Amino acid sequence: MYDQFNRPINYLRISVTDRCNLRCSYCMPEEGIHLLRHEDILTFDEIRDFTKTAVACGLNKVRITGGEPLVRKGIVALTSMIAGIKGIRDLSMTTNGTLLEHFADDLYKAGLQRINISLDTVDPSKYAHITRNGNLNDVIKGIEAAKRANLRPIKINCVIKESKTEKDALEVSEFCKSNELEMRFIKEMDLATGTFSTVDGGSGGSCSSCNRLRLTSNGKLKPCLFSNAEYDIRETGYERAIKMAIEMKPEHGMHNLKNEFYNIGG
Image (cartoon, rainbow, N blue to C red; front, side):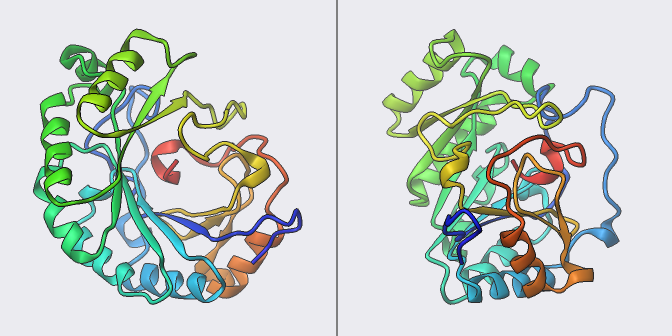
């Protein structure tokens, strides 16, 4: 399907949970967050059925996100349910990698094709500071497990302040070169002020070619990351919500005062 600006919309990002086992400083406030009630989060059947409808409408690329998707109980089964939908050509996941060692092989067997892993520094103490006590070694183990499971390509998402020439960014880049990993630099964004830029090494942030819809874990379909617009798939109906989101997709992002990164899936 095409939006009013003649952009082909074929990419669905699904946030399966607003929970995360890390508390990254640029994603979550230090005082904590207000979590959704479990009964408000989409069930596996709802996610599968909505995705089926989206594929029937022409979307063929799906990414599973969070929060941290690997903290969602039964994530391997959910991945298998999504992978079983005919018409999906590309099924991927974005994760912080800390739990990936325990899931990589099963996710691949369930039908996951590739994975993106967040990594902003290879300095253990800095990593612990940024993530508020995360363990860098867990991520390294997760990357190795993904390589063994043949989840390829493995892309590393590195958040930067201003430039990819920053010390931590350069060190992550060298780590990626040494370990045959693809590198993506993402400048720190702000939903409320509409601060964003194109991803270095990826297609994100380019409004003129944006092909994405985003489904939040509580069933709000968003046509744009930097927009307040959203359509409740439970109230509106799956197909109608998809058509409305595509029809109302803005030409470019402005700001988003309704969501935070931890509950929208990035």
